[in-house]
Length: 372
Picture 1 (cartoon, helix red, strand yellow):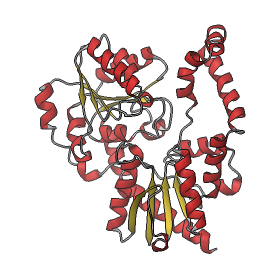
Picture 2 (spheres, one colour):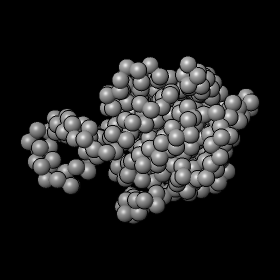
Picture 3 (cartoon, one colour):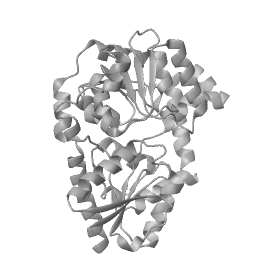
């Protein structure tokens, strides 16, 4: 089997969970005899070499639409990992700054009711917009859809009003960790230990960017003496936000920024942290949260996305719109040890071996559907 894996053009410059998912799945598939090449959307490709196309991420709509069209033109079965969650909660966060009507409605109706109205308005409006139509076209064109959770699958079906024929082509592929990096427990990262000594700290691994809500985490811990460590690149697309984060960090003090580390070094950083906090605007479920839990961290996760499907009652959840909610979740996590069985469950059920096997089954289904 020869697979062409396609991903957004800035994947190597601005890496994220979609890149990790692709790279780690590919690494396991290669050990199982699958030939898999990675290309960025738009690169010159010899399409005749491949049996099928695996596209990652529909949030970069123009690029994903182009890749879908190319797969169709070259008559290749298309497998899609959508990596999608409803962006409306994040958009609503900034709506009052952009339109006075939302400031007024929040004041009169309350945030919850105003958001319900905002969501209904946006969904009605979206169906006449090119972006929504393009995403729906990609989803209905794909031979197989591989969402990372049942919750993500339901979200896609609802948001894009997918027909029953498309729903039948959905196969859930959970995200994972590389078990050998976490079992046995990793050795502490020497560089971070040299920076902080043996002091426990709160960690966030991921880009410094609005969707990761770094600023709210700093505000939430303004009265907490624990060190706060961010590991990840500064988003080149949001330098104004990065400047705000830097200023808030300087005002709080005891905040440390570590540039993007090689993936192999992250387990040792997680091992030193007391809590990993990811109060993002959405996560599906957040690879960093999975990895941190496998290293023995207590977990704080956004309530928006599929994290509950993975962590259940073994994590603390917060509302990214509410700084006090983030504070309470982190304080609760700091006050209690991580559940031992959470690490064990992740090592058993959420590994790249498991994900690769289910992905392979999705490939077979796509090939079978084309030949049927």
